[in-house]
Length: 245
Image 1: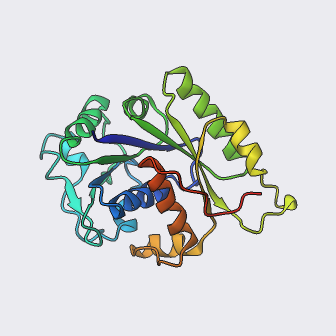
Image 2: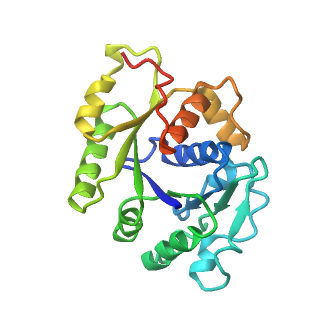
């Protein structure tokens, strides 16, 4: 049975798109045929992160306008045998039809093991897509503003019966100091109030490789944790790759 996983965040800049790309890459690494559906219209970046910006011939905007079918809008990521992308449109004003987006995800269940939805904001259209997901990854960084916004969004989703949420704490310094004005990670988990699925360390390779569209190197601490998150999604018991104590 395929799964739809919505990746969301209470605030921009937490690494939602990076998490989407790297968790999808991790699932593909473990042999799962995986599709990224990007909904950040006007601000698309997955084609750059996944190294196929010059290979995109179609995007989801053309599908929403009725010009092509959804499989035509799908582009294979050349660095992986199992990873594909439906790229967001560059047009920020296109109307997002939630029924059509949900239809995309449901149709793609026939072709993919995992559909990772890189969401955008929390308007009514996007919320409909999140509600249709089998799992929600809530991404936050360990600072007070992002943690508060993640908690607010998580509470809102719970009220709407979106209960299968998992927390990704991103950009965590391995040289944590109290004077950094960052939350203690136990406090982050308590404040957001959803089960933890991963703690991703600060890793310059994530930024560099994402901007160049190349895979993370085997030595990357971020790669190790993103693959660990992917393995946990698959049901495996994998310890955290970063010490949070």
